[in-house]
Image 1 (tube, helix red, strand yellow):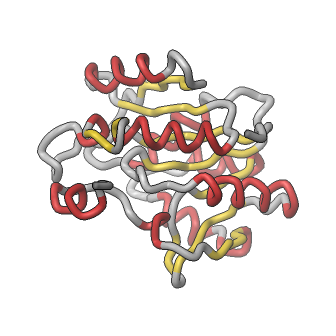
Image 2: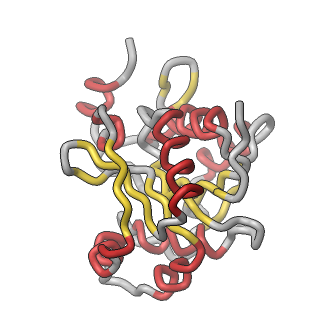
Image 3: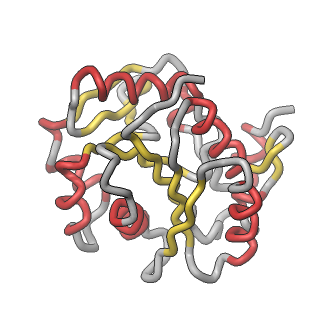
Length: 203
């Protein structure tokens, strides 16, 4: 495994799993959990620090992350102001928690266990080669996750207030986006409902 230095990952894991009806990140996935699969893939790809943003009340999830962190470089950040499915505030909390030695962050979904090592590596390699402010994977003209944002734009995103969304931020910075083409739909596939879980869970 080649280490990727200078890029951290922020996993957005504060959602309430309303549509799933139970804490979806704890559901089994292969010999892991959904969140465990995401963290394992990031580590295998070479990411050296992973920040996981959760709500303070998510005690089961917090305990699970602490267990995962025994052999993975995970750090919990609490989103004290989480409201509904508020992705923006979680990104802000994650960015604020990054150590000064990191120059870019991968914005990653906690409910996307199909994430692939090669896609993570390709995004990071593209950043080191291009130093593009934003790098987003694309499948058939659709944006996916994880996407990368470099440090010069962090303050702009941190200062963004609701009702603005991450999509609004990306629209404002279209000229800064570098797209990389991905040949499979894994970057688009997250697990929101029991139907999603049944459809995508490996046999």
